[in-house]
Length: 354
Image 1: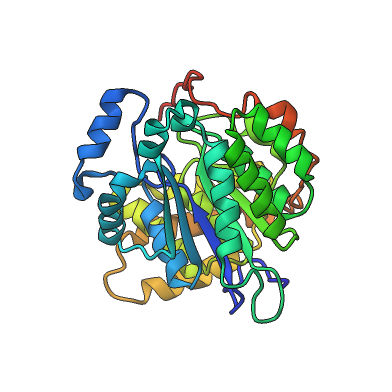
Image 2: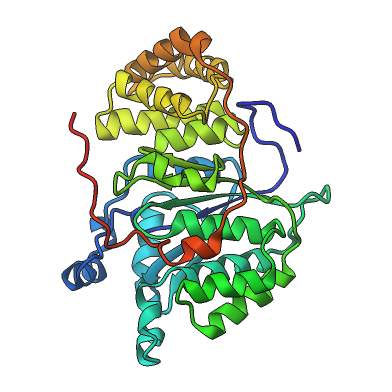
């Protein structure tokens, strides 16, 4: 289904698959002390990445089907579910990692490994959908949200290309073997892949730059992968893809302005950064301006003045923006990348000041 830029999503089904730690929750797990602190935190003590809850709520509000896939252990399910409820989130499934089982089976590589856990889980969730096609017979499309602290860009891109039928079973086996996956998880991934209706189902892969990685680090995966610094940027991209209404984008902007003290200039610069990298073109700006005028006509529009400053800046610059680059899906040498796909342990870039 072709959608105009910035159009309100139609009735076709759409799925958003979210990672949790460092994508949605500000979770520290680099040391044993971090893991223990995370395990005993009350749901109300868990910190959400600014704007993430607002975007998750807005996607749910528009009828997007939310599936959460996390490396957090299954023992944290009740705490995570309570945290999501506190944030007003709605989700269709929550998949957590069986780390206790891995430990009891002495599967130590699986405790931190992501490829052998996430790829079979993603494929299984795709297979478990009531139907992989919508009422019109079209394949149900997806957006995937992750971060740069683990292997999300690699795993998500591999998943997308497996679903598209671009990765042969023998190649998939070699890639997972190179990524230190266990034989049974390799077998699961190949088997589940065989049940997937093949097609270009993954529209966007959105990667939260929690570690402040350079966006250019992800160029190997093509422009389908969009690294972002804050969740307003993710909302802008989904809006211009026709998957998120303008009013929802403004609610995310309001959340950052009111709850996290972003000023209008910072909000506008978020768009300008995406435009400079070729991920947005300005096509959705008119719809945002109309939605803003509706917003300020209501009483108690929190953060409206800062959002207004953002809209004014976007209006002024819209004519200077160039057309966004078409989504590129280059041939990716997954076998070459498999041995270095996980960035954990690499030094964190110093965060930019100001």
